[in-house]
Image (cartoon, rainbow, N blue to C red; front, top):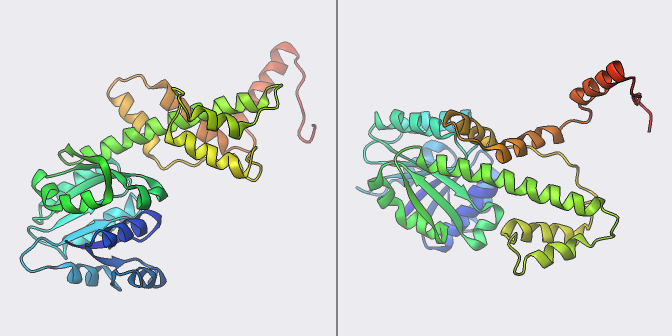
Length: 304
């Protein structure tokens, strides 16, 4: 099949490679001409603008298919507005980024008014997706999904492809997936800190390796942690600053909207916020209060 890939970052670039390897024809566009040239050298058809990418993706009476791999929010919304004037019935746009599922529903309605179908595709696999295949969760019109299924099948790992339901369903499933990911990561983080702080001189690399064999806590995340420990047994060069993509926040909000208690995911999100503070004002307030009501000593700035 022929498809235009818009956005050639870590995910979009590797997806372009995997599609080319599977025999699909990919038109590649990115704001960086150098990036476009690099993928053209690997077999993609280069485009110098979004308009040219759409033109090159047209294929007779077949639907024109455009895959967006750009940041969520305004970049995605702006790209969809542009595409609404470049495409028509029965063309299809796939949003493979981490868009909020509510935005995806609104975007689908907007494009439907132009006769264009939008598929929201939750995409997991990270930088390993090129070699291992991706896990894809797709929402939108089922007929549009069926049209694009050969593309999804080329990208997905065996068993890693799901038509989740109507517009928004794909990104909703991916949102909850990422919320669960936050909780799993935080649990490993806390457990390994307990091991690291103990009186035992434990080989954390060996422990992670051990737990990968027969343990009930074995997982791909543990394999990745084992890999990280192999080069730095105490992660010496890494600063404990943890950003969030937004999907953990949306998962917590959805839990509140649905009256679902989700303490682990919520607290894992709070821990990410805490990791970004060099000095916590809340901790200062706690220290000041203990001093005021109980006369407990406080440490002053600059003291060890």
